[in-house]
Amino acid sequence: MLGEPLRIEREIIERCQRGDSEAFRWLVDRYGDLAYRTAYFMVYDRQQAEDITQEAFLDAWRGIKGFKVGYSFKPWFLKIVVNRCRMQKRHRVVPTVSLERVEPKRVATGARAADEAVASGESRQLVREAIASLEEDQRSVIMLRYFAELTVPEIAQVLSLPEGTVKSRLHRAMQRLRHRLSPLMGFEIGRPI
Image (tube, rainbow, N blue to C red; front, side, top):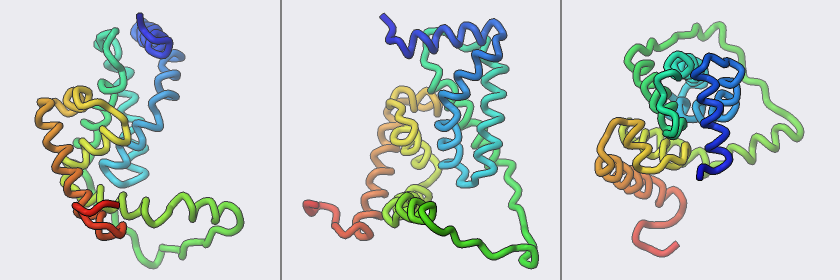
């Protein structure tokens, strides 16, 4: 028996396959943030991540009739997002901005500034930088496993890789992250925390 969320998702997808664009809105609401985060951690550019997310949803809408009902939508859709990110990286043009047009950043004040300071703590920044330093293939599996919360078989499906390859990339990526973060976080690998 399907769980309630899976049953609802299945019904929504069937409605989408019949051309119900309002039903597709449910998928956008459910997976929009995940798609954006996935794209952002692959391209590290907010505007590009927004564009990729929109394009991925358009691709999903165009291809929804070919989706096999009964399978999980999440890995199918994230494969579209990942492919869009790869295409974007291949065609990336580095924008330039005249320094004369750059305005100094305004300093946030009050409660909002306090919230932003807490949310963007130093350790979060260190982790982001460590993940960004990974090779793309390792960064992709880390992002899909820990941010998108996909299983190894789902990651293998998204990236069109054997499960063993996904596992070895996850292992190597975690080793690199441990080596990079352990001295910064105040502990050494091999010593109890």
